[in-house]
Every structure is written in structure tokens, then in C-alpha cells.
Amino acid sequence: MANIRLLRDGAIGRIILARPERKNVIDRQTADDLFAALAQFESDGACRVIHLGAEGEDFCVGADLQAWAQTMEAGSDAHRQEAEAFGRVLLAIRALMKPVVCTVRGRALADGAGLASACDLVLAHEGAELGYPDVRVGFVPALAMTMLRRCVGERHAADLVLTGRVISAEEAERIGLVSRVVPAATFDEDINATLEQISQSPATSLALTKWLLYKLDALSFEDGIAAGVVTNVEARATDDFRNGLRRFADWKAKPE
Image (tube, rainbow, N blue to C red; front, side, top):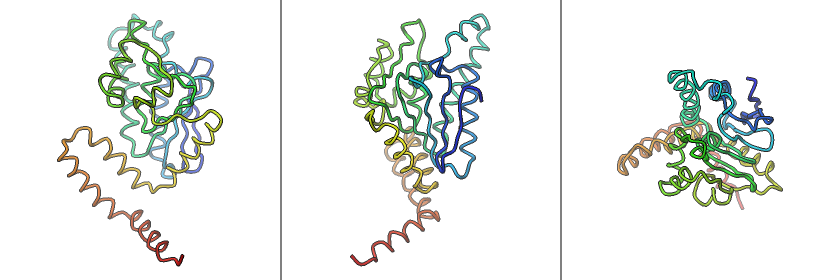
């Protein structure tokens, strides 16, 4: 995996984009490596949360346009395969039964913004910038729009993809593109604290919570409540919940 680094820090699996000299642009190899890395941590029983970050000043400024220029005449089948490779990464992030937390420092543009928004949590440095400037070069943020529209709604999505403007972390938080803006002075400390907090929760409750969160996209209100009932029952039957309930009962029984 030449373009990314993998490491596990206790229950935290870290996937780090490692092409800082190219602003961490995404080519076919990087997409394939990301997909493989996600699968590796999904099957790692000791990993409870996945951190997606990047080396250098920018998270990711989009696709590798230099590589695209060399394959312009490759034909539609080759272009489709490359697009599908990146699409598999976005689908894998949502399909994983473990939370994926993205940290954005510097710029997250085009496919970089799409990659970030596919994650469950997006924690942005106060100086970060996000945007979809694809239209300015005659392109379309075609894969990223599925997540963008879900995150910010139709009006904000249209504003971003039709103007191609790049927005601050503060505006991205206001419209729902990022989960939280993190102060520069405590960025690394706050990120690690959030990852550690998630990693301390039982694996089954994290998996069931993430599954239901996105399952609700395809359900009516009534069906969503019904799915919640089923998940409620499943959660109560897990050893993690039973152990947690015992710890809570023991804590309540302690004299003040």
C-alpha cells in the first residue's frame, strides 16, 4: 500500500493518506488500497473504530487529474472501472459495522470532500476548507453528490456543486457537511479523545447503532419505528448489554 499507511493503536485502526507531496490526490491504486485497508480493519476483532486521516497540509484535493490526463483515450470501460473503484470505497465505509471517523486538516476538495462526507463523523480543523469545484473544470462531482445531498440537503448541495465554491470549516459545520470544528490548539488531542471515547463502547452496540442509523434512509416513519423495535430487542440479547447493565446496577448500589 504505497499511498496509504496503516497502523492500529489499541482498539483504533488508522488509515492515513500518505501522498503529501501530491496533496493526497486519489488515483486507482489509492482507491484499491483504501478498500483493502477498510476490509482489513473490519475483519480485525481488536479494532472498534477506524480513523481516516492524512499526512501533510491537506487532507485530499480530489482525484489525480494528471493520471486522468494519461488515460483520456482509454475508453468508457476503463473510465467506468476507475469510477467504480472509488465508489466501492464510499460504499464500504457505509457498509462497515465499525464507525469511521474522518479528520480534515487543510483542504478536502472534490473526491476528497466526498471521501470525508462518506464517513460517520467528520472532525474538521478550524482552518480546514471543503468544496466541490469540479464544475469549474468541466467535470461533475457525480459520486460525491449522493453523500452531500444526504448531509446538507438539496439547497445547500446545489449551492456547492453548481458554484464550485470552497467553504470554511465553520460554514461546513453550520450546514451539516462536517460534524464538528476542532480548535487548532487542541486538534490532535481532541481527535484522539473522541476516538478513544468511541473505542470504549461495546462492539455490538456500535455495530447495531451504525446499521440502524443508515437503514432508516430507506424506510418510512412507521417502518423505521418497527426496525427500531427489532434492533432494541437484538441489543438487549447481547452479552455486551447484559454486562453493561450489571455494571450499572452495581454502580447504583454503591453507597453515596
